[in-house]
Every structure is written in structure tokens, then in C-alpha cells.
Image (cartoon, rainbow, N blue to C red; front, side, top):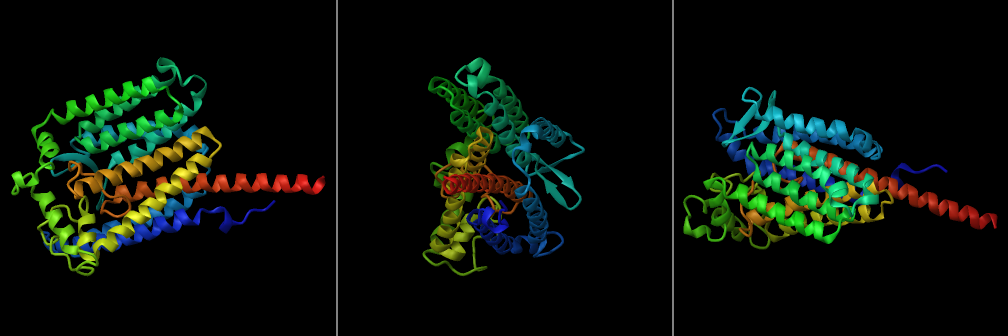
Amino acid sequence: MRYSFRKDNDWLLIITTFLLAGFGLVMVFSASYALGIGQATPNPYAFIQRQLLWFGLAVFAFIIVMHFPYRFYRKMSPFIILLSVFSLFLVLLPVIGHDINGAQRWIRVGPINFQPSELVKIGMIIYLAQVYSQKQAYIDQFVKGVMPPLVVVGFVFGLIMMQPDLGTATSILIVTFFLVFFSGAKWRHLIGLGIVGVTLFIVFALSAPYRVKRLTSFQDPFADPTDTGHQVIQSYIALAHGGLSGTGLGQSVQKLFYLPEAHTDFILAVVSEELGLFGVLFVLGAHSIILVRGVMIGSRCKSPFGSLLAFGIVFQIAVQIIFNIGAVTGMLPITGITLPLVSNGGSSLFFTLVSLAILANISRNNIRQKRLKEHKEETQLSAS
């Protein structure tokens, strides 16, 4: 039986992904051109040029990965996790690691900056999905089934905290918890892991004064409007200024050096100001389609590895969305987490598209398996 290329692809997932990514490119240019003009060497296209370069690489990678059988990642898992850990070591080296705003999270490659933690996110998901899919027979045993991969998670958490990057490290812990849950671990083990995870977060959050300020300032940003509360207050102004239909594309006032990180962490505030509630609903609607589709793909996959891989990708993206929107609206502390497919950030865009390409491949396999089953049933009926 021959399969149609068009019918095998999950076009709802693919089209929604690239609609949102294309929208993100437009908003990155709108939110960053003033910042580009304000550089030592004025160039209004500086940020969008780099983002377009990453987007081109990401589209090429998406096409390849979407047609690469996801099952092979099981064999590649040891190499992927070693590469991920190695990249985290590299970024800590003074000669190689690149410091931006006091955080050493990037490796400079020519004109672009590469953020290893974005590779680590998908690398950890592949590793955990592979390990826990093999431990299904004894996943109810904590020491033998649940604990061994968590040693690697703890090691990676420590390396990311050395950058430091509490937001990314916390997101990895949360996704790990969900993967352990979907693996079928006992509730008492999950509760214990939850307590350990929360304890780790509190310890590291209280270990530096600036983290304590971030965690407390969002509760009342007006208590310190010129320092810790400044960014959230400017975000409030942008959100309120946009109203229902916005001020118009390119017409944001807050992006003109009032709202810090308007093109990255707080790009949703610019979307709200320029395109209003309708623009925000488009972003949330597109993200919702991707997440719901991802959950359906994971639940329909017959392979434990594929199912865990899909759920891991979905919850990693979901956590980033929640962290980002929570920060922009002042409901959560500012973590520096970008909005997937929308914010400026080449590494984030690249690996988000690669992750969604893996998800598209899992969906492709699900569709083929369903067609095979239907064809087999039709053949049996016709034969009888």
C-alpha cells in the first residue's frame, strides 16, 4: 500500500507552527528596530537579520527532522545527552562562553550567539523518554526504576545554575516531573519528587539577593517602580494601551526604550499594545492548537518512547508559555524565559521548531499506523 505525502503529514500542527513563527518574525522586527537604531552602529535590521538567519536554518532542520524516524533517537540518546552536557561545560569556559547582562549562557559562533540550554531541553526529553520507556516493567520501584535518570537531571540542573539560569533549570525539573508521572510512577514517589524539586527551587532562589527581589517584586511592582518593579509596570502600560484592537503594527510606544527586553521576554506586551486583545488571542490560540494537538499525538502513540517524547515536548513548550505570560502579566516572577516561536532568540526558535518537527514525525507515524490498521481490516473483510 502506497502512502500519500500530503495525507501523512499533520498539516494542522505544521501550518499553525509556521503561522505563529512567521507572526513572531514580524513582531520581532517591530519590537526591535528602535533598539537596532540605538546601537553603537545603527542598524534597524540588526535583530531581524539574525532571527531570519536562524529561521532559515530552522526551516531546513524542520524538514529533515520531520522525515527522520523518531525511533532512531533511542539509539542516539547517549550521544545527545553527552553533547548536551558537554555544551554546558563549554559555555562556562571564559574563552568560549559569552556573557550578556551578567549571565554566561551563550557561545558566540561568528555573528550569532548559541544558547546550549536550548539544546539541553530537547536532549533531556529524549534521554528521559528513552530511559523511562525501557523501565516500564519496574517503574513502580523507586531505586531501580525512577531514581537513576534523576541523577543526570540533578547534574544538568547544577550546570545550568552555574550560568546562572534558574528559569530554564526550573522548567527542566517540571518537565522531568511530568515525564515521571506519565511513565507510571507511584503517587508517593511523585509527591516525594515534588517536595525535593520545590526545596531545590527555594534553596537556589534564596541563594542570591537579585533572585529574591525577582521573586518578591512581582507581587507589588509599585513598591519599587524605578528598579525591580519597573519592567512589570511598563508591561502593564503596554497591555492597557493596546485595548481591543491595538495602536497599529509598528506603533508601540513602550518599545521605544521604556520596556526593557521588549523584543525578547516581553514581546507579548508589544503584541498587546500594537495589535490589542485580538493579537494576544491569536498568539494564545495558535499555542493552544499546538499544545492540544501535541497531547493528542502523545496519547495516540502506541510506542511508550514516542508517547513520552511527545508529552515531554508539549509540556516543555507549555511551561515556557506559562512562565513567559505569567511574567508579562505580573502573575509570576520574571524568569527570562522567551515566548516560544514569537520572541527574539535564534537558539530558542531553532530548537522549538526542531522539537515540533519531532512531534510532527510522531504524528506522521501515528497516521500511517492507523491507515495500515484500517487497510488490514478492509482486506480481512473483503477476504471473508
